Image (cartoon, rainbow, N blue to C red; front, side, top):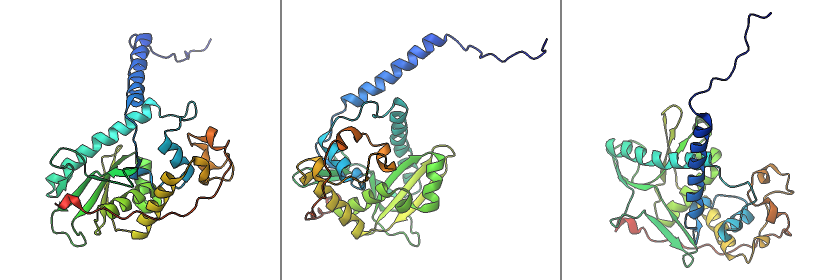
Length: 270
């Protein structure tokens, strides 16, 4: 007879009731997501996405493939990112930086172009601050809250290589809001509390490329007018796409170049 007894899972509380509560919480956040008003424009935060066909599906609000939407866990991660933005803004202001995150009417700074079909809203503008060698004001401010793996990848590779969509987003905002001094990217490590700061110079070419891509997307008659990023649906870049179903039923065509949109005036300085 063995003297070792097999370990059994200890019951903590009323497990069926606890699971039911968790399910209600999950259902509530999914309901909130479904009820959110859909954008009537292509947001600048997405212009760095290199698959133009995917962007067109997003712009048209094409229904996602079954089971491919954001899970409750991912939606809460997004919420943590939004919560972290307010916390980071407080840290920056307490350090002596003049951070502007809202206009006098309480709305975010942003822009609209192409008859309102393109637009975006920024985290903030650092209008001034401590005198630090190598820091020139004003600066666009972009903030993220990242897990440890993603945070370290960004630290080691830089925003441009590690987070190209974020990089393009920053360049677009600098161009459309006329901030030639570039931006300051901050990232809070959600696991360790470390803060990453990277000064990102303005890259006019990257801004132009992203703007041209956005114009091609909104000017297309349908997603099939735009090229896919992958050669077939097994391409790793297509593996996690939410639009594999409608995309691979289409016939791929190459996109035609389109004229870029001129940047708006820096109204935030007025």
